[in-house]
Image 1 (cartoon, rainbow, N blue to C red):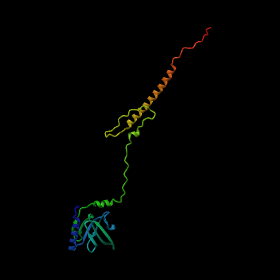
Image 2 (cartoon, rainbow, N blue to C red; image 1 turned 30 degrees about the vertical axis):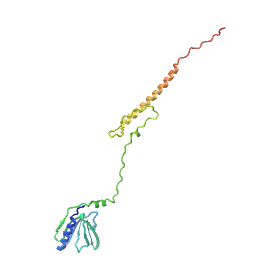
Image 3 (cartoon, rainbow, N blue to C red; image 1 turned 180 degrees about the vertical axis):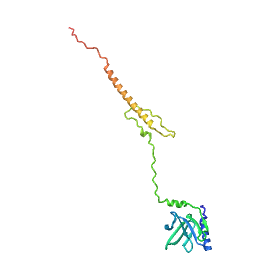
Length: 209
């Protein structure tokens, strides 16, 4: 259960004391976005308001809000002051009363103030490209170079620029060795064909009578 603040009860007590003693109660207000007061009378973010019976109409001192109607420059204005924004309540005649420590708006008011502020979209997160997409086996090579272990400590495959260059170099060397082997085989076949022994030369036939 939320603990009730003593501040509104103290404000009502000082107000009743002023009324019984014939004093005029004043309140000092820290003006913010939640206060509804005549801004033309605000100085340095503060305003002093009379809440006496002769100066106000329909005065209500609640646990969260002080509301009343008052005339400013001959024009009736509706006033609404949150309890947390009241810095003091005192008698105009002698200055006696109560003065409060500055307070922050409650969480409900803070969330209401930020309700209309647009939220930024989250930035897209970078993703690692799998190593299988980076390394592809040569299409024309019959020999595949051994792939070094790229498994990290977490069990996932990892690859660096150096290992990728080494794999590409070994693949090119394997391709070159395969092409050289094929050329050697073709050259050996031609040499074998040229060194094939020939039969004895044919002489002239003699006719025996």
